[in-house]
Image (cartoon, rainbow, N blue to C red; front, side, top):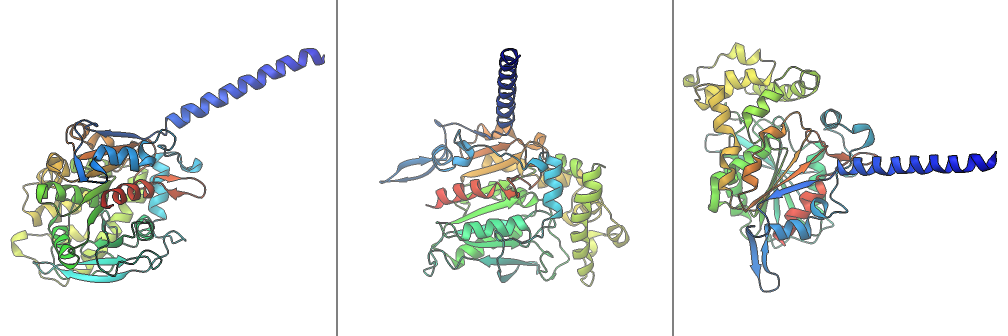
Length: 407
């Protein structure tokens, strides 16, 4: 009896072991990160020194960004109970204000008044334990959030602390859009998906205040679109050393269609969160006199319940566009990607329901030698949560990239 039992049990255990091995391998292969670029031969030159020789974007990616390109490390394994893009997005959205040891920071605020009288705020942070930047020559990271976001979001604070306390010892400034993060509203002109004027003025201000510092830009979601559009508009005159765009929509028409689709995520999570912030800012601006040329219908604006309605009744009219389609076309950063002349890294998720991958200009990343795209199979929109308890994966590749550029 034992003679018959032992072989069959062994065979069963071996079979289960093989199934487990191949199942795990298949799962891990499905978590592998893909990095697309123009390739090693045509990669753009980042710098050239006697010590390093010629350093290209390809070199930076494959020598310094191990979390993106090392065969043993280039995986984003989602938290087991957040295994889909939908779950990642919901978790990140609902817990966006949480504080923990990775994000327990306090900012110092600076207000900047724009030419039209509008006000934005910069929330500054540097780590007391980092190397001293008393000579004002240390690197600076400018971070910009998405629509309705601010310096108070968990992923922004966590990234800020990580960069500030890194070996590179970044001084970090988080750019708060008009009316966000309790920034005073001093102009009836709101920000929108393609409005780069405020960020351009901010970069000039920071460059003037810290002329010896290398400055990098990091944007999330709509902020990533504005950042990408800005560096494309600036071309060879761009003052930033590099830029990183996380969950960039690129094509606003594609992302708007996804955001305004009627489904559980949009109806009960994303739209209420974004619209709540925007409508509060609109109510705070109600004391300001608007330009009669805008021909705004105040009742329609205050009655808006979805982002599309605000775009049609507010953004389109203030921007002087014919309709919402022209607004999308003019605001989309996809039209400026070819003109990017600084090292640029985009990180997008393939299961992002807010900025779907069909809006990503894959072909442009294969031809412009200055840009690279990291595609993550499972990350949702601004989720990218891995481990137990969940930790934000994209902080590491961002830190690797910008630190290598300013070194």
